[in-house]
Amino acid sequence: MRIFEKASLKSEIQEVSRLLRLVSPDDVFTRLGLERRLRELSDQQDADPGSHFQSRLTFKGEPVVGSYGISAAFGAKAMSAFSDAVSAIGASLRGVLAARGPLPDRPDFEMLITGTAVGSFGFELESRNRELVEGGAVSEAVDRAQLLLEAASQEEDDALAEAVVDLDQRAIATVRSFAEVLAQHGALCTVATVHRTFSFSNHLEVVRSVARLEAGNIVEQEEVLSGVLIGVLPVTRTIEYRLANGEVVRGKVDRSVGELETVHESLHQLSTVRVRTTQVGNGKLKYLFIGRPELREPNVGLFGANEDEPR
Image (cartoon, rainbow, N blue to C red; front, side):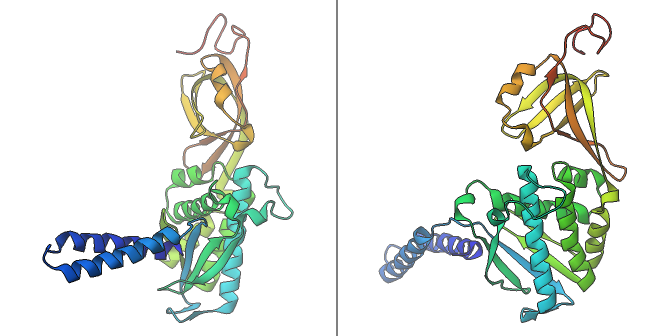
Protein backbone atom coordinates (compact mmCIF):
# COMPACT_ATOMS: atom_id res chain seq x y z
CA MET A 1 0.00 0.00 0.00
CA ARG A 2 1.38 3.38 -0.99
CA ILE A 3 1.80 5.93 1.73
CA PHE A 4 -0.81 8.24 0.25
CA GLU A 5 -3.33 5.39 0.02
CA LYS A 6 -2.51 4.64 3.64
CA ALA A 7 -3.32 8.22 4.62
CA SER A 8 -6.63 7.99 2.78
CA LEU A 9 -7.42 4.72 4.55
CA LYS A 10 -6.69 6.25 7.95
CA SER A 11 -8.94 9.21 7.12
CA GLU A 12 -11.80 6.90 6.14
CA ILE A 13 -11.42 4.89 9.35
CA GLN A 14 -11.70 8.09 11.35
CA GLU A 15 -14.81 9.15 9.45
CA VAL A 16 -16.56 5.77 9.83
CA SER A 17 -15.72 5.78 13.53
CA ARG A 18 -17.20 9.27 13.84
CA LEU A 19 -20.42 8.19 12.10
CA LEU A 20 -20.72 5.17 14.39
CA ARG A 21 -20.68 7.44 17.41
CA LEU A 22 -23.59 9.42 15.96
CA VAL A 23 -25.82 6.48 15.03
CA SER A 24 -28.88 5.97 17.22
CA PRO A 25 -28.96 2.65 19.13
CA ASP A 26 -32.29 1.95 17.43
CA ASP A 27 -30.82 2.26 13.92
CA VAL A 28 -29.60 -1.34 13.88
CA PHE A 29 -29.05 -1.77 10.14
CA THR A 30 -27.01 1.43 9.75
CA ARG A 31 -24.88 0.45 12.72
CA LEU A 32 -24.24 -3.05 11.33
CA GLY A 33 -23.25 -1.62 7.96
CA LEU A 34 -20.82 0.87 9.49
CA GLU A 35 -19.31 -1.75 11.80
CA ARG A 36 -18.78 -4.09 8.85
CA ARG A 37 -17.08 -1.32 6.87
CA LEU A 38 -14.88 -0.44 9.84
CA ARG A 39 -13.74 -4.06 10.13
CA GLU A 40 -12.89 -4.15 6.42
CA LEU A 41 -10.85 -0.98 6.68
CA SER A 42 -9.08 -2.16 9.82
CA ASP A 43 -8.21 -5.47 8.13
CA GLN A 44 -6.69 -3.56 5.20
CA GLN A 45 -4.64 -1.43 7.57
CA ASP A 46 -3.40 -4.45 9.55
CA ALA A 47 -2.43 -6.29 6.37
CA ASP A 48 -0.11 -3.50 5.25
CA PRO A 49 3.51 -4.25 6.29
CA GLY A 50 4.42 -0.54 6.09
CA SER A 51 8.06 -1.50 5.56
CA HIS A 52 9.01 0.66 2.59
CA PHE A 53 9.70 4.36 2.54
CA GLN A 54 7.46 5.99 -0.04
CA SER A 55 7.39 9.41 -1.62
CA ARG A 56 5.86 11.22 -4.55
CA LEU A 57 7.61 13.33 -7.19
CA THR A 58 5.26 15.24 -9.47
CA PHE A 59 5.81 17.82 -12.19
CA LYS A 60 3.98 20.60 -13.96
CA GLY A 61 4.92 23.16 -16.57
CA GLU A 62 5.94 22.98 -20.21
CA PRO A 63 6.90 19.25 -20.34
CA VAL A 64 3.62 18.16 -18.71
CA VAL A 65 0.21 17.72 -20.33
CA GLY A 66 -2.11 18.05 -17.32
CA SER A 67 -2.47 14.69 -15.61
CA TYR A 68 -2.36 12.90 -18.98
CA GLY A 69 1.34 12.63 -19.72
CA ILE A 70 4.86 13.99 -19.56
CA SER A 71 7.69 14.45 -22.05
CA ALA A 72 9.65 11.20 -22.09
CA ALA A 73 12.97 13.00 -22.56
CA PHE A 74 12.32 15.35 -19.64
CA GLY A 75 10.88 12.65 -17.41
CA ALA A 76 13.92 10.41 -17.87
CA LYS A 77 16.36 13.26 -17.18
CA ALA A 78 14.48 14.54 -14.15
CA MET A 79 14.07 11.14 -12.52
CA SER A 80 17.73 10.27 -13.12
CA ALA A 81 18.87 13.62 -11.67
CA PHE A 82 16.62 13.23 -8.61
CA SER A 83 17.90 9.68 -8.03
CA ASP A 84 21.51 10.92 -8.26
CA ALA A 85 20.74 13.69 -5.76
CA VAL A 86 19.23 11.29 -3.21
CA SER A 87 22.14 8.85 -3.57
CA ALA A 88 24.78 11.60 -3.28
CA ILE A 89 23.14 13.16 -0.23
CA GLY A 90 22.89 9.77 1.44
CA ALA A 91 26.53 8.97 0.74
CA SER A 92 27.57 12.44 1.96
CA LEU A 93 25.70 11.99 5.24
CA ARG A 94 27.54 8.70 5.71
CA GLY A 95 30.87 10.39 5.02
CA VAL A 96 31.75 8.09 2.12
CA LEU A 97 31.35 10.46 -0.84
CA ALA A 98 34.53 11.04 -2.83
CA ALA A 99 35.12 14.09 -5.01
CA ARG A 100 34.69 12.01 -8.14
CA GLY A 101 33.99 8.48 -9.32
CA PRO A 102 30.89 6.29 -8.95
CA LEU A 103 28.45 7.21 -6.21
CA PRO A 104 29.18 4.85 -3.28
CA ASP A 105 26.48 2.74 -1.59
CA ARG A 106 24.13 3.55 -4.43
CA PRO A 107 22.02 0.36 -4.01
CA ASP A 108 21.18 1.49 -0.46
CA PHE A 109 19.44 4.59 -1.82
CA GLU A 110 17.83 3.12 -4.91
CA MET A 111 14.11 3.78 -5.36
CA LEU A 112 11.51 2.08 -7.51
CA ILE A 113 8.83 3.80 -9.56
CA THR A 114 5.72 1.97 -8.39
CA GLY A 115 3.02 4.00 -10.10
CA THR A 116 1.92 7.32 -11.49
CA ALA A 117 0.78 10.02 -9.09
CA VAL A 118 -2.73 11.41 -9.10
CA GLY A 119 -3.08 15.09 -10.05
CA SER A 120 -0.15 16.81 -11.75
CA PHE A 121 1.74 14.14 -13.64
CA GLY A 122 4.47 12.34 -11.70
CA PHE A 123 5.49 9.18 -9.99
CA GLU A 124 5.05 7.23 -6.79
CA LEU A 125 8.48 6.20 -5.47
CA GLU A 126 9.35 3.46 -3.03
CA SER A 127 12.67 2.50 -1.47
CA ARG A 128 13.98 -0.76 -2.86
CA ASN A 129 16.10 -1.89 0.09
CA ARG A 130 13.65 -2.98 2.76
CA GLU A 131 16.34 -3.58 5.40
CA LEU A 132 17.57 0.02 5.40
CA VAL A 133 14.24 1.81 5.77
CA GLU A 134 14.06 1.65 9.56
CA GLY A 135 17.42 3.35 9.89
CA GLY A 136 16.21 6.23 7.74
CA ALA A 137 18.79 5.86 4.97
CA VAL A 138 16.51 6.70 2.05
CA SER A 139 13.97 8.77 3.98
CA GLU A 140 16.66 11.02 5.46
CA ALA A 141 18.25 11.59 2.06
CA VAL A 142 14.90 12.54 0.48
CA ASP A 143 14.06 14.80 3.43
CA ARG A 144 17.40 16.57 3.09
CA ALA A 145 16.86 17.00 -0.66
CA GLN A 146 13.52 18.67 0.12
CA LEU A 147 15.09 20.95 2.71
CA LEU A 148 17.92 21.91 0.38
CA LEU A 149 15.60 22.73 -2.53
CA GLU A 150 13.36 24.77 -0.25
CA ALA A 151 16.24 26.73 1.27
CA ALA A 152 17.78 27.37 -2.16
CA SER A 153 14.48 28.63 -3.59
CA GLN A 154 14.27 31.40 -0.99
CA GLU A 155 16.54 34.41 -0.39
CA GLU A 156 17.60 33.65 3.19
CA ASP A 157 21.36 32.95 3.17
CA ASP A 158 21.53 31.56 6.71
CA ALA A 159 18.81 28.98 5.99
CA LEU A 160 20.69 27.68 2.98
CA ALA A 161 23.97 27.56 4.92
CA GLU A 162 22.25 25.53 7.63
CA ALA A 163 20.90 23.13 5.00
CA VAL A 164 24.30 22.47 3.39
CA VAL A 165 26.72 22.72 6.33
CA ASP A 166 27.11 18.94 6.74
CA LEU A 167 26.86 18.03 3.05
CA ASP A 168 29.70 17.46 0.61
CA GLN A 169 30.01 19.89 -2.29
CA ARG A 170 29.41 17.04 -4.71
CA ALA A 171 26.07 16.25 -3.07
CA ILE A 172 25.08 19.91 -3.33
CA ALA A 173 26.07 19.87 -7.02
CA THR A 174 23.75 16.93 -7.74
CA VAL A 175 20.79 18.81 -6.23
CA ARG A 176 21.74 21.80 -8.37
CA SER A 177 21.79 19.52 -11.44
CA PHE A 178 18.24 18.41 -10.69
CA ALA A 179 17.11 22.04 -10.43
CA GLU A 180 18.93 22.77 -13.71
CA VAL A 181 16.91 20.09 -15.49
CA LEU A 182 13.73 21.76 -14.26
CA ALA A 183 14.94 25.21 -15.29
CA GLN A 184 16.03 24.12 -18.77
CA HIS A 185 12.64 22.56 -19.50
CA GLY A 186 10.42 25.17 -17.88
CA ALA A 187 9.14 22.72 -15.28
CA LEU A 188 8.21 22.85 -11.60
CA CYS A 189 8.16 19.95 -9.16
CA THR A 190 6.63 18.83 -5.88
CA VAL A 191 8.40 16.36 -3.58
CA ALA A 192 6.06 14.84 -1.00
CA THR A 193 6.53 12.36 1.84
CA VAL A 194 4.41 11.53 4.85
CA HIS A 195 6.47 14.07 6.85
CA ARG A 196 6.61 17.09 4.58
CA THR A 197 5.88 18.48 1.14
CA PHE A 198 7.93 20.94 -0.88
CA SER A 199 6.80 22.61 -4.11
CA PHE A 200 8.36 25.21 -6.38
CA SER A 201 5.74 27.95 -6.72
CA ASN A 202 7.08 29.49 -9.92
CA HIS A 203 9.91 29.38 -12.43
CA LEU A 204 11.78 32.20 -10.66
CA GLU A 205 12.26 29.98 -7.60
CA VAL A 206 13.77 27.25 -9.79
CA VAL A 207 16.19 29.68 -11.44
CA ARG A 208 17.08 31.14 -8.04
CA SER A 209 17.84 27.66 -6.71
CA VAL A 210 20.23 26.95 -9.55
CA ALA A 211 22.11 30.20 -8.93
CA ARG A 212 22.23 29.90 -5.14
CA LEU A 213 23.53 26.31 -5.27
CA GLU A 214 26.55 27.29 -7.36
CA ALA A 215 29.85 26.43 -5.71
CA GLY A 216 30.94 30.08 -5.79
CA ASN A 217 27.98 31.09 -3.61
CA ILE A 218 28.76 28.51 -0.92
CA VAL A 219 32.14 29.13 0.69
CA GLU A 220 33.67 26.43 2.87
CA GLN A 221 36.86 26.66 4.92
CA GLU A 222 38.54 24.48 7.52
CA GLU A 223 40.15 25.93 10.64
CA VAL A 224 41.13 25.06 14.19
CA LEU A 225 39.28 26.71 17.06
CA SER A 226 40.79 27.25 20.50
CA GLY A 227 38.59 27.43 23.57
CA VAL A 228 36.45 25.30 25.85
CA LEU A 229 33.77 22.72 25.15
CA ILE A 230 30.72 23.79 27.18
CA GLY A 231 27.99 21.48 25.88
CA VAL A 232 27.38 18.37 23.81
CA LEU A 233 24.14 16.66 22.79
CA PRO A 234 25.02 13.16 21.50
CA VAL A 235 21.56 12.36 20.14
CA THR A 236 21.23 15.47 17.97
CA ARG A 237 25.02 15.55 17.42
CA THR A 238 25.36 19.20 18.42
CA ILE A 239 28.23 20.95 20.21
CA GLU A 240 28.58 24.32 21.95
CA TYR A 241 32.10 25.70 22.14
CA ARG A 242 33.26 28.91 23.85
CA LEU A 243 36.12 30.76 22.14
CA ALA A 244 38.84 32.76 23.86
CA ASN A 245 37.00 36.02 23.18
CA GLY A 246 33.90 34.71 24.96
CA GLU A 247 31.90 34.04 21.80
CA VAL A 248 29.93 30.79 21.83
CA VAL A 249 29.66 28.87 18.56
CA ARG A 250 27.25 26.04 17.99
CA GLY A 251 27.28 23.43 15.28
CA LYS A 252 26.61 19.93 14.12
CA VAL A 253 29.18 17.17 14.49
CA ASP A 254 30.19 15.33 11.34
CA ARG A 255 29.37 11.63 11.36
CA SER A 256 32.97 10.80 10.57
CA VAL A 257 33.77 11.83 14.16
CA GLY A 258 31.88 8.77 15.44
CA GLU A 259 29.91 8.39 18.65
CA LEU A 260 29.95 11.34 21.07
CA GLU A 261 29.34 9.69 24.44
CA THR A 262 32.97 10.13 25.54
CA VAL A 263 33.24 13.76 24.37
CA HIS A 264 31.92 14.83 27.79
CA GLU A 265 35.41 14.07 29.14
CA SER A 266 36.60 17.26 27.45
CA LEU A 267 33.98 19.54 29.03
CA HIS A 268 35.25 22.79 30.59
CA GLN A 269 38.89 22.09 29.72
CA LEU A 270 41.16 24.04 27.40
CA SER A 271 41.16 22.42 24.00
CA THR A 272 41.39 22.86 20.25
CA VAL A 273 38.97 21.42 17.72
CA ARG A 274 38.84 21.23 13.92
CA VAL A 275 35.79 22.72 12.22
CA ARG A 276 34.51 23.40 8.74
CA THR A 277 32.74 26.70 8.28
CA THR A 278 30.12 27.35 5.63
CA GLN A 279 28.97 30.78 4.50
CA VAL A 280 26.36 31.52 1.87
CA GLY A 281 26.44 34.99 0.35
CA ASN A 282 26.65 37.53 3.14
CA GLY A 283 25.13 35.24 5.74
CA LYS A 284 26.58 34.12 9.06
CA LEU A 285 29.16 31.38 9.38
CA LYS A 286 27.74 27.94 10.12
CA TYR A 287 29.98 25.44 11.88
CA LEU A 288 30.48 21.72 11.39
CA PHE A 289 32.77 20.05 13.92
CA ILE A 290 34.94 17.60 11.98
CA GLY A 291 37.13 16.46 14.87
CA ARG A 292 36.98 15.80 18.60
CA PRO A 293 38.25 18.42 21.05
CA GLU A 294 41.94 17.84 21.80
CA LEU A 295 42.95 18.85 25.31
CA ARG A 296 45.73 21.39 25.83
CA GLU A 297 47.92 21.93 28.82
CA PRO A 298 46.59 24.78 31.01
CA ASN A 299 48.41 28.10 31.40
CA VAL A 300 50.19 27.94 28.08
CA GLY A 301 49.00 31.24 26.72
CA LEU A 302 45.74 30.16 25.15
CA PHE A 303 43.86 32.75 27.18
CA GLY A 304 46.88 34.50 28.62
CA ALA A 305 49.45 33.47 31.19
CA ASN A 306 48.12 31.71 34.29
CA GLU A 307 44.60 31.89 32.96
CA ASP A 308 42.03 29.17 33.19
CA GLU A 309 39.04 28.65 30.90
CA PRO A 310 37.21 31.76 29.71
CA ARG A 311 34.36 32.99 31.86
